[in-house]
Amino acid sequence: MKIRCEIKKLSQRFHHFYVFRDLNLQLEAGRVNLIRGSNGSGKSTLLKILSTGMESWSGEIQYYFQDKIQDYNEMRNFISFLGPYQELPEELSLRELIDFQQALGNPSGFEICYDVLTDLFGLRNDLDKPIAHFSTGMKQKARFVLAFGEKRPVWILDEPGSNLDAASSEKLWQWLSDCRDAHLIVVASNDPYEISRSFCVLDLEESQKKNS
Image (cartoon, rainbow, N blue to C red; front, side):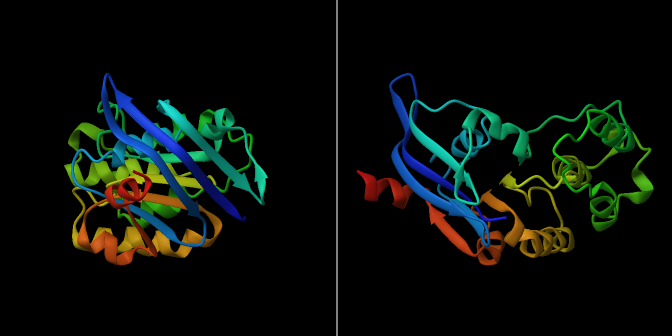
């Protein structure tokens, strides 16, 4: 599917402080779009707005599927979001969390790949273990399984390699690369390895300088 996102004069502020102002970007499927910037430059804030999880102060975000503009308020049904700060119910097992998500239904008929991701990250033998017994790296892998078990059109990932070992990071980025043509993928990271694996690197601070 041909997917793109246009960000037009987007601003976000808290009280009297602007995190970013009049930001203009175009993000497209067919590549991994990586956004970098120093701490506090607004990377995570921008991703939360793109995922419809936070309202912007001003500006516009437009998603297009096959050149047809989508209702921004409906986009939450087509977006998968991953962040290392997402809490997981630690008393439940990964299998129980997967079963719960699947019980919610899949009305849009997205491809299901929980088993593929569980095998990819080597969690097959840990499915019945409570999340409380997972290491920090295993919890990040579990977040990935839960976020992308349904292959929705738009993937938004905030520091996806957090707490992952080198081998797991390589598996993750190979999977993203293999899927980039069919999905709009947006990543926020300053990790040199992740930057080297991306097909389009956008510097958030440089973009703001151009718009100032």
